[in-house]
Image (cartoon, rainbow, N blue to C red; front, side, top):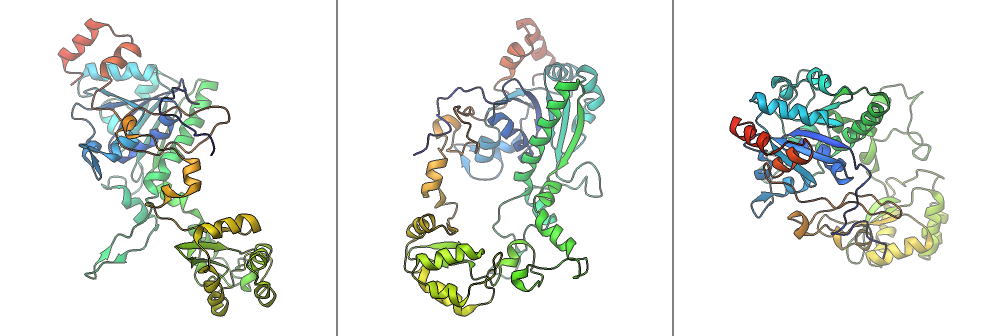
Length: 418
């Protein structure tokens, strides 16, 4: 068993120790700073006195708090500031003076309307990096269109509608791309900007749309369709298909035989012998070299599309072993194969158990998966539980800004702290 990348009691500082992010977010876009917090950045989530209602949004609700909040707000600190007050704005600017990044994860312009646009932020901290993350971005005809996470997948063509039992169109089960890809693109851009700002003293203002992230993440399909707009004399399919154009990405797998799902004795496996060498290894390993001799295929990318006779032979072969036995044989004989899991069965998979250690409920309020990174000779920091509204207000004012009792009392009296 490999060493776990985390221990619940770990206090490792993390790769981003010393980076401070001031976050203003509502709902899912707050996930943009979660990987930064997971890697050790100090993320201060500035909330209105009412707080971010992500705590009550979607399901499941774990002991009164949404799993979405418990996950995307883990490792962060919550400070309540009423930015409708002059005093609240001044405290916010004090935080900016001591920060690397201001993250605006909501509809564009929220901070600008409070007199906290980029020019104001830059006037107190020339090296500040401001990143705005929103649904459709700050330009284009959809910029003011209200939306939630699945909107970006629908817009980007990630899924096709299915039909429910009553005959109505319905949302199919799918991994939500826009809200999960945006944090990765944004975190990469934020860190690049911070590196430059620390080297040059110059910050920058940037923005990212979750819809853009969904489209960029699905580049292979859209770029393939775009390439197919060129004449067939310039853009063809694979030589193994006699250069016929397949549909892009996974849709092009339809009709595949050497690259296909098969039923095992106790589940399903994905067989992927699209290279001739792997196909030969498989046939030899199962004692059916005659299958290779009859249908050797091309050197690369040959899925034996439409070969129902071969598919029937392989179906019988795969039913003879369990999924675990097939994985073992794939390792031994060197041919590509994968168990077909579900989100429910995945945690029982031996590869998953080796690579992941659940962060326990006692730590985060619900069992959660850690940041999927291993560092040789180091441990990842373990995030703290997602905060209650304003849980860290006084601590941040004292420890980060150096405010004394009198200053904090005056702020409370003014209503700046809610």
